[in-house]
Image 1 (cartoon, rainbow, N blue to C red):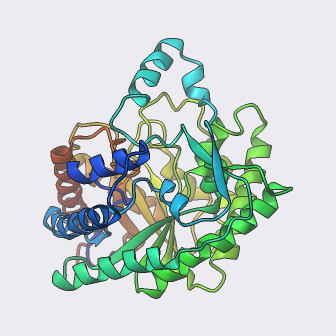
Image 2: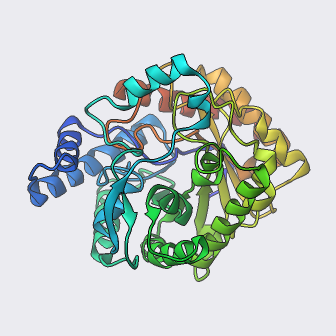
Length: 390
């Protein structure tokens, strides 16, 4: 995993705005309409071909395929796992429930047409969960590699995303396994196929694990913090099981409190879960420090430092507002994180979360997304002039 040796490198968490044609195809398929798989595949590949140079032009150093060939950061697994069926709806968030006026707005926003919902109409695990279609992830890796070959030098390094066993377990309700532990182990074994394919193709693997913070105010909202920390420990154990044969310096773990514009005042503090997170056998963490509820929590690393060989991708851009952060603000955020880390080479600048985690879910307009990423670039350059003085 690349470090910021001479300057602060920039990256993001994965999902970028999808073209309208591609989004319409995903929505049509999700709505039960017949969609030609060849048309969808062609649109997805065209989107990857477009998104790589756009990232490079915006100044992204460590980029990806924008998750263009997936309708959601985890729902795409419906076509790759066995044992899924039925339907259920995720529990309401604690921070939404406590504000009735906001809840009404939230329901109006999240039930709007034109988006893939990560909360409603979710499948359940009704039988044995296995990964049956390795060709799908292999094709994604191959497509991305071919696009990168057509744009040599576009990125200093490339990554690809895959969900954690924990977010899949939380979103795809277990109705088959006798325990959560067995379900997590089955999911870890299944997802290992994707993890190995991504690393084997030469990319950095980013494991997206919002569950490690988000589930406190969803699945565990009525339980003590200790119960939730136990869940975090079990998920981290399942991740370690899935990546046990992979070099941890090729893996980064993304943890967040949910990509939603909501109060977030029921979020678990990072300090409560950090000891459990640090058990993960990974080379770095991707954490959000731009949003107003967690902007201060980089200070947790003063008393709980990362290992010397681990990097921190600090979220310094908020993916939930159309305000374009000033480069000076971005630079200040980077510098504060670097000071706590004690070594700027172990810090990369990124975004708090994805810009379109499920097709149509993003709240930031496409042209503003690219303005934000350019501001990320400019802020990183400003910070670099201070952090890497001769």
